[in-house]
Amino acid sequence: MANLTGRVIKITGLIYHVKMPDETVLCSVRRSVKKKAEFELSPVVVGDMVKVDVDPYPPSEGELRTGVITEVEPRKTYFSKKKTTLKMEKQQLIAANIDQMIVVASVKNPAFKMRLIDRFMITAMQGGVEQVVVVNKIDLKHDIDLEKVEKIYNSVGIEVIPTSARQRLGMDMLQETLKNKESVFVGQSGAGKSSLLNAIQPGLKLRTGEVSEKTGKGKHVTTVVELFPLDFGGFVVDTPGLRALGLTGLDKRNIDMFYDEIFETSHKCRFSDCRHKDEPDCAVKAAVENGEIYRERYESYIRILAGTE
Ligand SMILES: Nc1nc2c(ncn2[C@@H]2O[C@H](COP(=O)(O)OP(=O)(O)OP(=O)(O)O)[C@@H](O)[C@H]2O)c(=O)[nH]1
Ligand SMILES: [Mg+2]
Ligand SMILES: [Zn+2]
Image 1 (tube, rainbow, N blue to C red):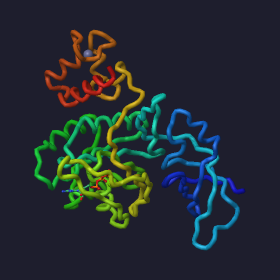
Image 2 (cartoon, rainbow, N blue to C red; image 1 turned 90 degrees about the vertical axis):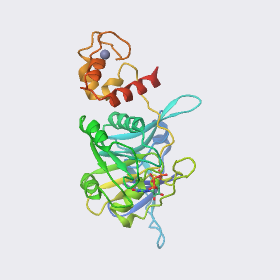
Image 3 (cartoon, rainbow, N blue to C red; image 1 turned 135 degrees about the horizontal axis):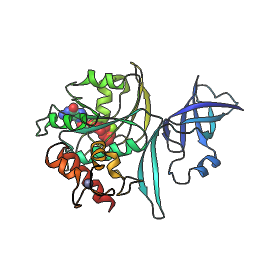
Image 4 (tube, helix red, strand yellow; image 1 turned 135 degrees about the vertical axis):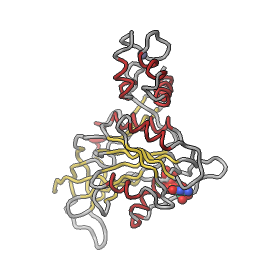
């Protein structure tokens, strides 16, 4: 049996599609690999580099060869969310070995929610992935202060790209950002992740769906996580919009680490364990008052903090 290395590009049910140098092999996962992933719901995810025992028999005409995944190589980066089961808190890995997370929000339908963007940011930082914010549907009439949003994220080194998949606005900038990188598209259902990818590369022909008139929410159109090559270089992973993004590994003492400017300022607080809430002589609160720290960032921090208390 040939033992080769490949990359998981798609998972459908229990079948793992692994791209090898010359072919795509349909694989199952060896029991020992499943056992190792005790705290993870999915032992193998899209983007994983895996060792495969490829079936020696040639596939019949027009069929793909089959194999077994025997090992998962250590992940350089990952994107995961929390899944609470009856018994314990587990990490649900969604994609591995990607360079950047493109957090797609929309100015409207569904409503723009900075706190959701920030939750994605935290998961990206935890997984060692760079972040970019895309604000889509700018063709719609809305009341979001895009300049302010850009200022806030740019101040912590995060690029913001306003787009309209419908009117093809911002596509050059998005393409430039995606070029020669591996990106995972995340965000609320209906924000337009699949539409943006179709606008960038029509050949992808990803399924897109309506946003409900009644609830303003997406209808969870994309259901399979899949890795696609881009014609201009790079790869993208489209993901299903998440209903909720649970965070793992957060502790009320370390949340400020995910807010660069808050973390830096925190060294000037009177108490070294200051949470920047009701403590006296808090340098962070003072910086918010005098405009050195954006109030929106502070409020986002406080909301995440509240969730861990
Ligand atoms: N007006 C407007 N509508 C858009 C734009 N981009 C996408 N839409 C619409 O928004 C709806 C949802 O788009 P999708 O691309 O399916 O959204 P998604 O983020 O992939 O959603 P899930 O796969 O469910 O997570 C569709 O009806 C799109 O036509 C845009 O730039 N402007
Ligand atoms: Mg989609
Ligand atoms: Zn403080």
